[in-house]
Image (cartoon, rainbow, N blue to C red):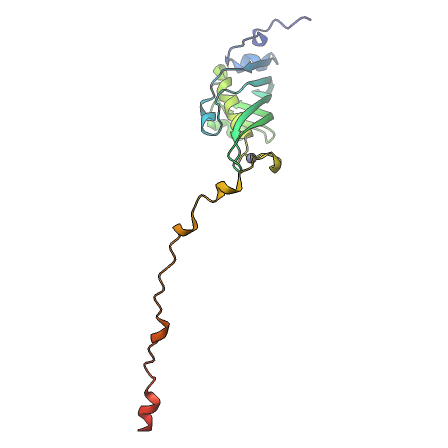
Length: 189
Ligand SMILES: [Zn+2]
């Protein structure tokens, strides 16, 4: 097995790369994140440092660097049906065109998502964090409802029924006023 001499395929590659160099060389960045913290993941997942396997293939399209990537991981989320922790597998593919300025947004072909960044110092952690967040479901749920942690029926009766105060009966049926009750008698007179 002979590996290409490119430094980008070293066992612990740098997570800040010159995307232009990689793109012109049509190089692949491959790595695995094991204890990297993805800060924005903290809001949606139980752990912000999942194990993520990443492969990024760089190339040039219309004189601009593009990345076609895959990421594979398992993220720990909270099922919104049973509120238990669940492992959510993510296998995501994406295609990005790297642009250095918003002025270039209209240059990005439809089959690519724009990725605004410093192209010479592309931060792969940021890029992967964003793709990971995009891949997560808005509302996490066990795929099969049978996998949901069963809640014992007794626990559902948290709210005692007598805590709901019935509105006081204010109609006094026995003494309904009939303002014209005597009208007929009065007319007879
Ligand atoms: Zn569940």
